Length: 167
Image (cartoon, rainbow, N blue to C red):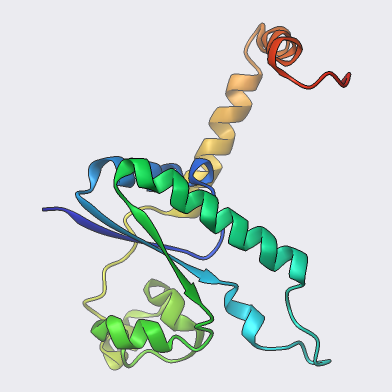
């Protein structure tokens, strides 16, 4: 039985997360965790919310859309509200219990010395380097768009399926 845990901080669309889509198709059990704006709980130095209402509503809609996209694959999104200090993580992931501060959300970035000191040395590193995967995906899209005939085909599809507005 394969179990995968995917932890999203941003990019709540399945199409933006190609590694997530692959894991969702192959894992028997997938736990996808996203937080409701991690930094939103703490106000700015001037006392204002870090995230406005429109951004919060957009993220909630994005989360609902991601959850709906995962359901046909037999998966669900675990949407957690406000864990800016990592209390939820420390409670449910014992390897990270001793990790302090923002390292709790990316413990693999800690030095080996700090990982041993905090008890997180057994916590696995990410399977996918998301920055590298995003760079590769952007590179492939750019290469595809540069193919001969791409613009003409895109225009044909736009005329056939797109909006009636020109351009």
